[in-house]
Length: 58
Image (cartoon, rainbow, N blue to C red):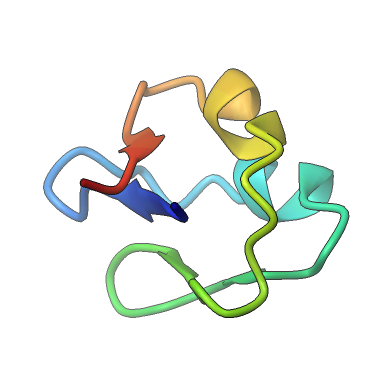
């Protein structure tokens, strides 16, 4: 199960992308996005997000 970013609360700070070991996160407009095919469910992005915008996808 990949992680997802809530575009309504994402501040586009880039902290998640910097911590992703798979480079699965990229800048979007207006929020960052996670490529579910690259995501390995490590949770590094969720821990790094200062706005709490990242959670496991359902």
